[in-house]
Each structure stands twice: as structure tokens, then as C-alpha cells.
Image (cartoon, rainbow, N blue to C red):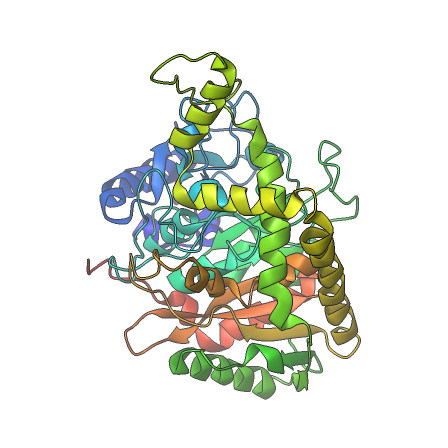
Length: 478
């Protein structure tokens, strides 16, 4: 038995039965992760995998580099946070440690979660385990690649506009963005505060349900956390989908989708039909405005959130080459110039512009009004259906360097994932096939706010009837 090939639930059963010890699992998984990391570059650092608590889930877990762990660096894939060590645990880390989980490392990401390919990281690009010459998606590319490659059984990422679901699709794993407010954002370094959510990456839906149950719950340190009961998600799986109403939004099946992606998603629709689901066409009429709306709202919030990184309190402090009269201003400018990468600077400048005097009403205020229309589209759609089904991304994983010179093409990678963030609803990606090049295709499911239960159950039914989640990458190519 090879530990890196097991699921979390499978390993837990073996630990409970005495077939394996938690210490052995942590040691072998960490050793394998280290051995494989020169190929994937998924981890940016490893932590001591010592036991964290007395809970029942004594398994290794790794976290995106924007989730704070007490006594460990949290650099968000950026030079500007070099040297910063977190003085506290994020809310999700507290819950993981209380469950007995062992945090073994921090995972690579696009700088400050700005990207769809994990190529903007100060630590270099992450490589897709299915083809090492291709991207894993982003911004949580390290989180997806590590699970796909078997470096860790499960991981956490963050999703602001698709940063869990799109890399899950590219890497052939399960990724879920919870409802906004379901999981505490305390200790998550903010990108877009009204959009960010922490969520799980796993190999199958059962593991996803378990990890979501562990990290969910109210946290009064997060002003956006919602105080409502957390269902026992694992126990609610396997109820079938007979009579479940699944909406297919016509706006998500458009020109530009790769034929192999479209074919795999249409085959998935047939699986649900044969399982007894009621599949119907729906409309989300403001979908075409989602990307533009997102890149106003998200960059505005990023500009505000990243203003704190100026060389005074956190991380890097760059001293100007020649001291001038306004020394403190020179230090701010030099630190931010040297500390932030090109994509971070681009988004900060965009956000500052749309919030500036004379442009606030024309851009930011108008974007918020369109966001409301997009949210209403979903509310109306859910009057007639229980789930919404679409491709996760219009393409499979593209080659490293293929889109770095074209930011607009990169931004369009998230065209199908962004609307769920704007609406605040839960959404997930799960494997639904492969293209002709052997690259994974992702299926996206979306549900009403706080109805992760229906989302996970439908995904579990699909998974049991197909088995795509059992495929493993070869880690070849360059």
C-alpha cells in the first residue's frame, strides 16, 4: 500500500483500525512531498509535522501561502512579505489543529492570489502534474497540484474569482468554494474582502465533505462570518439525485469552449439524466458583464487591502539608493516597487483608478449595481432549479508562458467561475473526463447560498457513477 495514493477517509480508517499510525502517515507523506517538489514546485516551505491536537483527524494537510499559521512565514507568494512570520493561527488552522490534523507546509500561489496560472509567484511557477510543461491553474495552483500529485491528501486554498475551482479543473481534483460567510476569513491575507473564501482541495467528494465540515463554522473575529449550524456533510452523501432539478445556463455554453471540454460536460449532463435528475435550460442574462464587474470590484478591494504593505510594519523594507528629503515617502515607493510583481502592480493601479475622485461613480458604484443584477439572476434561477451545471473553465490547462503576455486572455480563464463569487453562492469543480491530450476537464456545480449539502450529494452521485476521480497523473513532460 502506497500512502500517497490513498484518500483521507481511507487513511483515517487504517489509522483507527491500527493498520497505520498517524506518525507514519505524516512522515511518509512529508518525505514524498519533499521528494516530488522539485518537479511540481507546489510547496514553498515545509513545517514540522508534529501532532497538533487530540482530535480524530490525525492527517497531514497543507495550506495556501496566504493562510496564517502561528510561528510560520506567510508570504502570499510575494517578495514584499519576505521575513514576515505570523503571530497567530487563522480560524481554519485552529479548527484543523483541534481536529488533530498536522499542517506540514505552505503551498505556492499567484502573488497575493492575483492570477489564473500560478506564474506570478515570487517562488516561480507551479507545474501541472498531468503535464509538467503546463500550468496548474491559479491562484491556488500549489494547493491543487499538491493534491493531484499525491504530495498531500488534502489542502486548503482561497477562491476570490475561481481560484479553487479553476485549478481543481486543470489538475483533475475536487475543489469547493463555500458560501461567502460559511468559513472564517480570519487569518486569510485579504485580496477582495467581499469575495474571498477559503475552501478544500481533495481527491474525492467524501474527503471534500469531511474537510468542509472541519473548517466551517461561525467566527466572531470575522465580521462577515455567518452564525448558522454546520451540517454533517459526510453523513448526507449518497441520497441520490432523482427529481433534482439541474439548470443548464445557456450563457455558459458559448463559442470559445474547447470541443473536448464541451463534450465531457455534455456527457456529464447525460449521467445526471440517467440518474433521475430533471435537467432544464435556464438563463443568467447578466453573465456577459461578470468579468468586467469582477475586475473593478476585486481590484478596488485589492488596492485598499494592499495599502498596508509599505515597508513599515510587515515584511520587506527597501531603502532608496540615495537618501532624499522625503525619506519616508522614498522608502514607501522603493519598497512597493521592489516588493510587488507586475501583476500585483497592475491590479493595484486599476483598483486605485476606479476608486479615485471623479471615477468612483462611473466605475466602482456602477460595478456594484451590476453585481446586484448578477446576484438576482441566480436568485431567480434557483426558483426553478436546485443546482446549476456548467464547465468550470473553457479550456484545459495551457502551457507555461502561453498567456503571460496577454492579461485579458488570462482573465477570461475565470469566465465561468467569477459569477458565483459575485453572488456569494457555493460552487465546486470535480473531474468529468479528459481531452485528447490527456488533460483533465472540470465540471462545475453551483447551489443556493448555504446549500453545500445538495452540492456535495449531487457531486458524490456523479463521482460514483463515473470514476474519473480515481485517475492519477504521470508527472511527465516539461
